[in-house]
Image 1 (cartoon, rainbow, N blue to C red):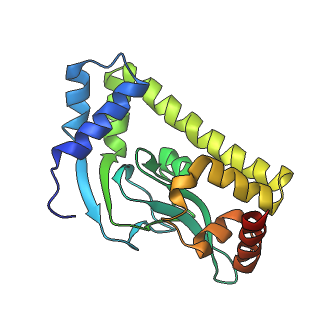
Image 2 (image 1 turned 135 degrees about the vertical axis):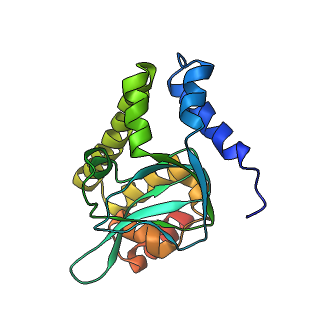
Length: 201
């Protein structure tokens, strides 16, 4: 992936900004996007390690990542997947600049636009239009967390699986059954059984 055009990831990030903040003018966009950096990561590389303070928000231009933690038995528990046009972050820890409890790891080779924390804060204070960007990202992360909590409270394993594929069908060929079963909170054998039942029904 090393032969990429650096302008394309930044252009995609700029378009994502304009989509949520249509009031941003060219000068405001240029001030912000001229200070971001494009990084490339191979598959199975850590973007964030538990215990670290995340210094940059990662806009995913290409590739797929997951957020996970390691439980007391040493098992990796996946809590979400991050695909193109979404942001790689432990957002709660990021906005408070405190150590994260999670790992963020690439599943596929990735191209990310790194947006430093200090640049986000500078953009907020310099241009009011950027405040909407911060608010909408926070709301998106809060909604995702709430939906995940409610899925475990009100849905069984089969319903969680069906809900996942209804919203993320394109990810099924990109993630392993091990990661998916961990995300759904079930054993891999249980997921295999659910898939077999659904395939024959």
